[in-house]
Amino acid sequence: MRRTLAVLVVAVTSMVALAFLVPLALIVKETAQSRALANAERQASALVPVLALTTRSGDLGHAMARTQAGGRGRLAIHVKGGARMGVSRAPAAEVAKAAAQTRASSIELPGGGYVLLRPVALDEGRGAVIEVFVPAEELNQGVGTSWAVLTGVAVALVLGSVLVGDRLGARVVRAARRLGTAATALGSGDLSERIYPDGPPELVAAANAFNAMANRVTHLLAAEREMAADLSHRLRTPLTALKLSLDQLGPQAEAGRQALARLEGEVDAIISAARRPARAARFCDAAEVLRERLTFWSALAEDQQRPWELVGATLPVRVPVPAGELTAAVDALLGNVFRHTAEGTAFSVTLHEGQDAVGILIADAGPGIPDPEAALERGTSGAGSTGLGLDITRRLAESTGGTLRLDRSALGGARVQLWLRRNARADGSR
Image (cartoon, rainbow, N blue to C red; front, side, top):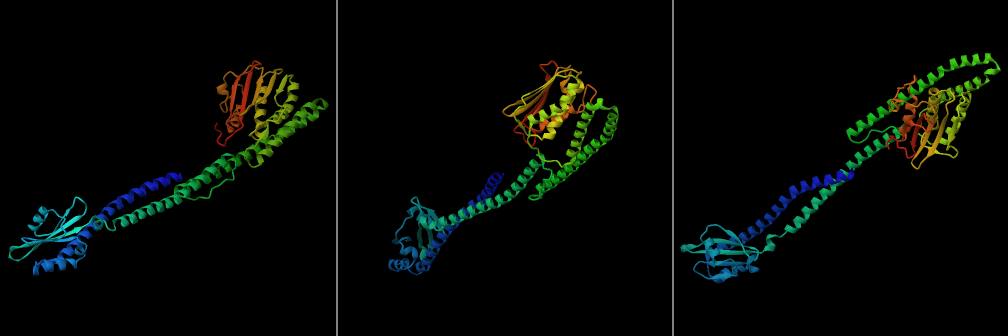
């Protein structure tokens, strides 16, 4: 952007400089020519009183030698009906034509330079013409120096305007770059990012709007975390009542008490996570998360006599999402398997590690999903649930630039493919 502004300033300043300096350069040249011709006319006028007094060759030669042009051999006098004195360069026809006029005239010579012809009226109807030769170097004397000065002024103006434009452009670029950096940081999860308004009024307004937006997002997320914590906390009362009921059943309810204890631990984890401020996304080990969650769900799978299998989760596999969010997504998908398939239905979990993406594939031998596209819509479910489990998983995938896909599994039922891109970007784009 700074380069563009500099080029624009150079173009505008150059056009303005040319608009003023070109006519000024022509005026300087014309002024130099006028000055040289005026000087020649003054020298010719100095001989007019001499011609009025005498036309003798000796006196005129002496008078001519005392002038600057005569001393340089650039002066000549043509007396009508008399001799010609000095070196003449003007054609005879032009001299005769000038003698018939009443004012001085100048003609340009083919070899360069000008000749000034000054007619002088004498007594007894006689006349004379004073010829002064002005060489080309005198016509252009000082023009080159003046043009060099004008060129230097133009270059100085352009350089000065570029410097000023670059400083102004740097201010705009710095402000815009700070705004972009802050937006990237906020999109990455740093809710504390703010901008000091600086730069042009438009960017100052944009910075103030960004700060207001960041404050609003922070307040909304804080309210959402508080609401999640409050809702989770409300589960403690029915869990406590359920625990008391299980205690009254005696030893035969030991499995139910263990499951209830795990559920209480999950509720406590949700409350703790909701109370913590949001942080930027970090990496976690997907294999470890899958092993931990399958250990949790294996107890319920054994109670329901569900065959299950975990494939590809032996070595660490890093993914660019927090462990808590991946755990929530895996629990949502496994919960759908237990909720929407009959007891005894087999399922499998496969961890696939690619070069640019990591896939978590959960397949079951149930009836499948009749309308996969509708199932991916938020709040939509055809099985009597809230429909938010797949939406949570989809948003987790899109936060890394990945996707969530639904298709038919090799077991005959549904297969959910959660793909997480490793080169995740803040905007979630691919």
